[in-house]
Length: 485
Image (cartoon, rainbow, N blue to C red; front, side, top):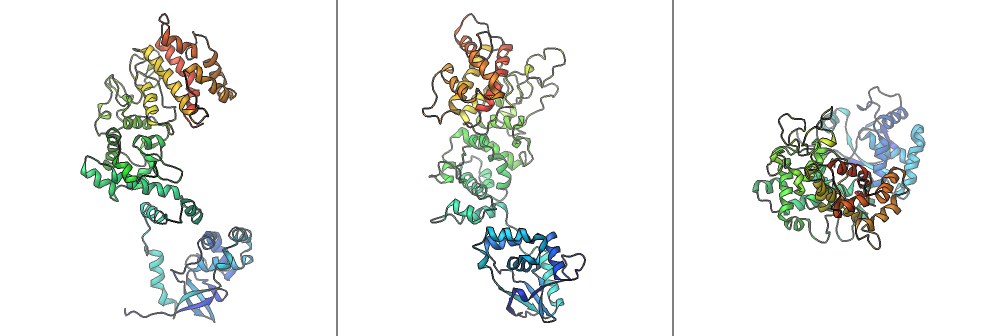
């Protein structure tokens, strides 16, 4: 068909009429009031009002109208026209008047800026507009931006005179920091000196979507393990350096962990549904151990060797698999079952201590490694070493937790633990454990005196059962101290 330019005219909003034959409305309403009520109730016109008040009216999509009975009837754009009418006169929608007036109050300075007249395309008859309207609503007239594209759009605003705070004010309903993190991570990855050229190409391509990869890096412990720590504005620290330069300077061991993670995404082993990205899951503990290079990534009893260096399923084998000599590295199973009904999931049948209940989201990677060693160590074979490792974890955690104190806590366990007593000793859930740790006798596993005797008293026999009892005593305190103060 030959192109014929249709007239675009400016019409008072009051002179525009809603289409009573609107395809959005399943049963044709009797009058415009009924049409308004339906559109507000079923087509979320309130959201359209909010967008107009927040962002202003922009006529990139000009409504289509036909002149009938001396009025301009809107064939396309009924939601937008309904929104403009209600903003001007909230009383025309009694059921939603209070909500409209609330929005007018919230955006009071913007109300006067909305137009009293708008441009419309005028078609000679309804038939002339049908194909165009059908294409708009039954096809895909505009391809929606991907998350990455949206992120780049918001990032492009930043510069002299425009801060993250300004962006948040400009787009209050958008997760600005989330999008800025996506851009920062993509740039960080493109700077990493991956040994595999195919992996370098993958991280820079659309094949890796940040909306999927963020399932990994939104966990602070996983992010820290691959060399990423965000500030409050979504920038990778140190913010003075470009993300790609931070990626380029990764130490070899950190890069190796990142390569393992990225290879998992490229192969499909990792995805948004992977248990490894479920907070507190054993699979997540396994992944963190693998990324930080902890000995807990592979059992010294045999375990699943693919976790130590291979690129197969990072979850390894099931802890209940028959014939697994060392058990699942995630559980540290080993030793005898001890008889009775205790199975491989009983903490006392595991090689090491069960750290799956401890939070890892905020602690530095070196403290993470030390905590994960609790799971890798063979408590039954080396109980004294296990006791000293447990003491080290407790003492180091206290110092990290109270690092922002002025002055920071320092010294031996008996010198730093009083800060725990004064800070958390009054909390009902921790009171008994803290009192027992602080005041328990040498015979009380987990008390400061017991830890001291285990390290210095040559006559004290340290039994593996005592180490497990000590861990049971301090575990609730560790859970609190492994979170920020």
